[in-house]
Image (tube, rainbow, N blue to C red; front, side, top):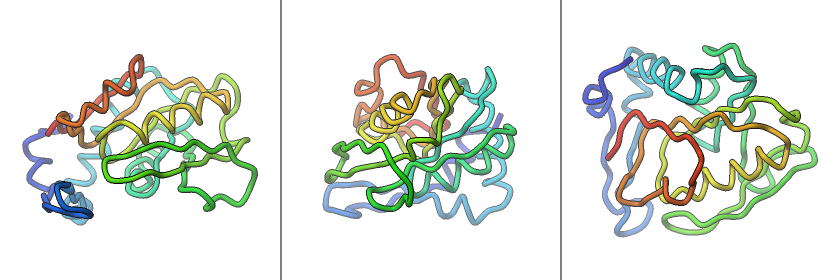
Length: 175
């Protein structure tokens, strides 16, 4: 496991971005540090949701892709992208949701998850919980069983867990 305080040093706070009042958590300093990035991926691959084995790791666009794909590789699982509306070329399930500073729609291919497959959702930030809730709904509609949600950063003041009762959520950093 990795030391959360050490990883926190690699997250840059950017106030009032993308809109006034939002504190953006920039993970690019962590991504550019090979050792910190490797520790982050190893830790995300060992959090609670990954413990029982997984068939697929779902990454949420866009920064979730950066974390989820190497976690999937480390776990020997497939990787499935959940994308913004209109970005997937095949038939999709769609789910709309609200987030901290707007509204959005995410999609997954209808054939991406087979019934009964164990799915781990990985994302960079759990804020208000809308993206995770929408992604969980998509995975369930496709027939998958969510074994966990592993996030790098949880913004506890925004109560994202409250929007996702029953989902096992594990966070490396709570801010």
